Image (tube, rainbow, N blue to C red):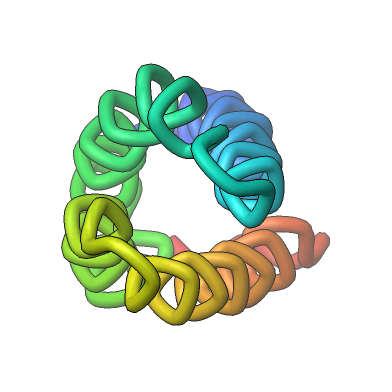
Length: 103
């Protein structure tokens, strides 16, 4: 894969990871996750595809984030999974925002 293509895919993944983080953060408000999951769940799968294609080292964390997106539907306990999802998104954002390419 060309480096400029991988760079563009990393930027798209970074932006979608920010949207996932926003969805989890909004989901901390009672009943709002039922609305924000409409973009969180599709975006975690899109991020998995980008992570696999670019090989940027975020694949495992993205797989865990998929599980957190679905486990966040559990009443009351879902807040814990959303908090874990926020942490994973922050770690992925930090990994994707580094200037040095890892591919």
